[in-house]
Length: 329
Ligand code: AQP
Image 1 (cartoon, rainbow, N blue to C red):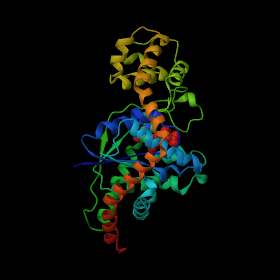
Image 2: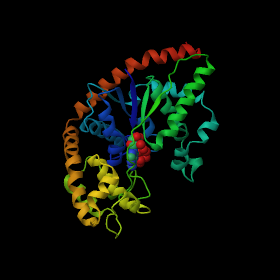
Image 3: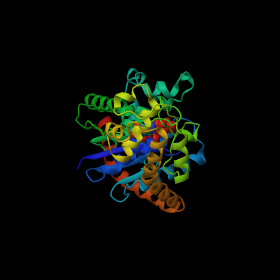
């Protein structure tokens, strides 16, 4: 069976962007693939994290994955640091990947910003750890959004370079699974993506938000004074409007064109009422289940520990073969 690997960082509140861009699709893939879903805490510490918040976020993300319908029995859910093979294989890949390849990574440039010299070495080497995450399980498919495409390309380059350095066909080339997921933007600024680390909680709808918070955030979301257009052409240059229509479409499983046709000529206040109802219908049960799971941390920890055991069983023989290929054993 084809194997999927994907990860999410425990860096704060899971939000609607994480849900529509990744987690909802992960739940849909569990019927067709052997899935490994990882809470990537080693990636999280590439930027400073408060230790107790990191622990709490790891549990919260795990609860979010389960509340969104990912079954921890059929799939593997675990946190990355429990399987030491990720860090070990990443080191081998640090000795395969070239500086020039990493220098091209746009995400590092964006995240490090103007303070490049002050960024951690871990943030710079993030893509080699991501390559290790995927190849430690010889995953065949990786669901990726636009922002991760470049990193998956690098993973393939590393796999190719490893195979050619050691004259082997050891690593398969993981294929991207492009799911056409919407990129959800901030509710306060349509040019910025919705993000866990945005200071304003009004910029995002959290997966754990209750109905009242969802309604308040949608009501406060930025729009423009124009009515809703009858086709997507009328969304040109209207980033906030396009974002809200995109969110509605993704939640309703409709295209943005269909949403335009449904609401053509209506005002944003009318549209927002419908969006509030829909967002609550989809998200409130998830938030409710996350709350229930947060009251049972023992169960969540058990899921992570079982998942790590099962992940280790797959990773151990692969890492041991890598060590033989490289000459470490
Ligand atoms: N706004 C978004 N729209 C669509 N998809 C999104 N994802 C994140 N934000 C959006 C997708 O969610 C998955 C997990 O992301 P991540 O936690 O590994 O890191 P990220 O992309 O850096 O997410 P954040 O929320 O922006 O976190 P911070 O603020 O910590 O950097 C990925 O598949 C991602 O594409």
